[in-house]
Length: 99
Length: 499
Ligand SMILES: [Zn+2]
Image (cartoon, rainbow over all chains, first blue to last red):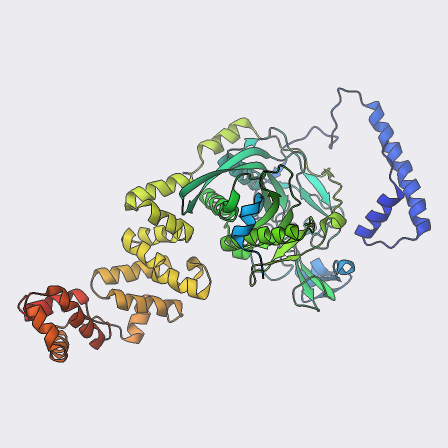
């Protein structure tokens, strides 16, 4: 059974830096559990002789040549950033909670 | 007072594992066409794909696959007939996508090995390092931590990200644990990274510059009591960016672990960062807490099924192995084993070869790189190859000594000046007015002066004691400030004294 525990959700929330209330954790754990179980049911349909796949199309070896194409301008690249400084993306301090 | 290395190895057996990351030298990134130039202005080499913007579709760089397969073949690996990319999910701003595209349980190359040699006081020792896997992934962006202690994560107020490096093709080469190295673990680690670097360089798949981070080593070290088969807890040291540091990091971690174990404390499984200045490691983020990668196959990239003929074409085109190349050089240059080992150990073989290619005599080239230049490098605590003196400079100096335009002593002055940034050898000679005194008149004047101050020595030489002439020659060299050709002085002096 797939399932996801409340602890799993709490841990993922912590890693993703999403602050969640105990009520939200309870709610999400059960909701995500339902989703995972629904997906898990699909696996029951596949017989022993059906290998797991990651792609619906029978494609392989799709490559591009090693050629440089123009990049975005730094202005364009940074235009959607919530904050920037010195032509760089500005983000809250990292791992501060473990310092 | 820290524990002595001898005490560590008397009690414990080190278990070594190495992970090397190498940035491939492709023109464009792994999954997009952005440029890969090192040191470009921040965020000038990014696009929707490497910034992870919604709707962007990555496509694999064929050259990167080719390079990775070449690496696998050179490391005696099997090439997987089918492999896939996977998403390694993590929440850290060095990847704007919130995941790194990597390979998980289906790496492209598996089960290889690399033989390395170390020069010990018990002679040359050989070790086989088994390679578990070679897989493809992409490099991460560069963080600049602002505030607090400069450059460090802890205590920073915020971080600034440059994604130029994010998405540059990266190959990770992971060894199996290397057992049986005993006290040589630090040297084996270094020799492995050096040999791997030489192979990658010979394949021309990366510029393998450790100081620029295009070749990076993580060293995993644990200790177990000698005779026990219970593995100890390992630490993973990152940020090891020179061959010398690889050796120091392994030795340092062995000592640190032994100190903890001797006190009855436990080694924490964690990532540590090597500190170049102290040679010690500092605790990084705690792994158990941070890791939950939830790998899954990358749905945007299709599987890699390399054509067997393509693989065989690459195998056939592999360049000469560095170990074979070294043997050939050793024969061509007629170098004894010990001298060859010294060059490898000092990491000057390649630069000596480059100097010889430019016309220098192998023995002379080796002499300068292992002698005067190595001495200065040692003094400055850098690698000889990192000093601002080139094979071309050394070849020029060797040529000037050969023609008699420089004496060995003057050549040393020129080398020092070149390294001090006074210019190329010809410029230094010009600016400093360095010139061999070969004018017989000037030399004879100095010789006569030497004889008059040491008449007793001159008498001995006249009497047939030729070796005594050394003192007089020395005086002449001093008088001419080393600018005289010693052989010429000797010839003139002995003739003058009737010998
Ligand atoms: Zn890009």
